[in-house]
Amino acid sequence: MPYAEGRTYNDADSHFMETRNWLFEYADPKVRPKLKPIDFTMAGGQATADLVDAVPSIIERRRKDPAAMARAEANILDRKSWHALGGYDPQERKRALDLLGYNRQLVFTGVTMQQFWGNLGVQHIFDPEALYGGARAHNRGIAEFCRHDRRLRPVGFLPLDFPELAVIEIEQAVREGVAAFWVPATPPPTMSPTHPDMDPVWAKMQELDVPFVLHLGGGILFQREGFLKNGKQIETGPLGGTDEIRSKDYMVCHYGAEAFMSAMVLDGVLEKFPRLRGAVVEQGAMWVVPWLKKLDIAQAAFMRFESYLNLPLKPSEYVHRQLKFTPFPPEPVGWLIEQAGADLFLFSTDFPHPEGGRDPLKRFKTALDQYGISEEQRERFYASNFNELLGSHA
Picture (cartoon, rainbow, N blue to C red):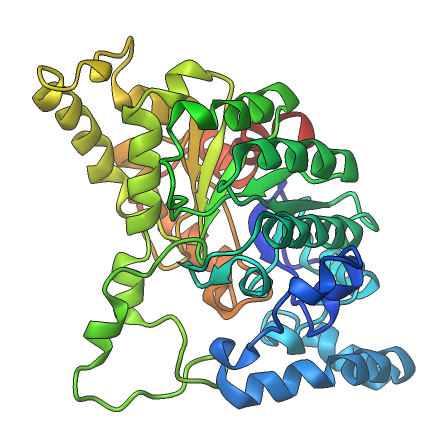
């Protein structure tokens, strides 16, 4: 009996747990020397780095030892990161999905972008060959991982620094099977994502019916370093290290996404490309309710001085037409739906990362029950909003 049953569950956030050599295996030979090695200590200290090196032996042991596999299956909601069943091996992921019962999963990587783009949103300067060669390797690799099971929908990574190269990568990655593109919330140093020179990127996504997604790690955690200097002991986190997402990071992790999406709405990109769709994933959704109000206030207050704000629709109407958001399991999704509508929010588990918790279905159900959310609204949250976001790639 699967964990999720009785209805269709489409999971808008899951992860592939990359290893040291994974990206190099998919990179063109001339690109490999330009890629940096991954620093896994940033994801949980030396304990995580050691665990990553043990992944092949962990998988091999489960293949040969039925008792080890049985333990992994029995603890599928408890074992996280590189310990998890299906985190790295595609055949294990098929079994994990059988046990979990999800109909679809969007699949992101985690930290491999630091090899060619940046480290948790801190952007570095790379030459175009390294930047887009790294993205090409990433997109080949995640597409290959997901190719073994139709339930898995791969999310490519798309730097926006060179729009003409971004368009080429969109076309190539969609041919490989990529179903959505993770774009950095941190703008390129040369232009806003709403600059007219970026129009070919959004036009190509609209043409190919593929959405863009903002995800944690694609933007700077605002003012993080200063507030960590609080005179308090830094304790280990769920992955076993000290440099992990913490309470104050949660409070501000959406800032980059909020700024990006505000620009996309107010600068008229969503008006210009009405079939372009996007989402904000793993950055919470509590901020969405006041943000909708603020967008409309910004239009009314500044339209006299910024004539481009004279759009045919209210900014909040573009959000409802084209954007989606994933609440964290502890957030009151029933209240979010009550305040902002059932069309905006997506079910997600973050499997096998720890942020999803050990029983996301229970937490979301409790939050929906508390506000008397209807069956039609639940269906949107658990399944149909995902299909709207992915379109023909669902």
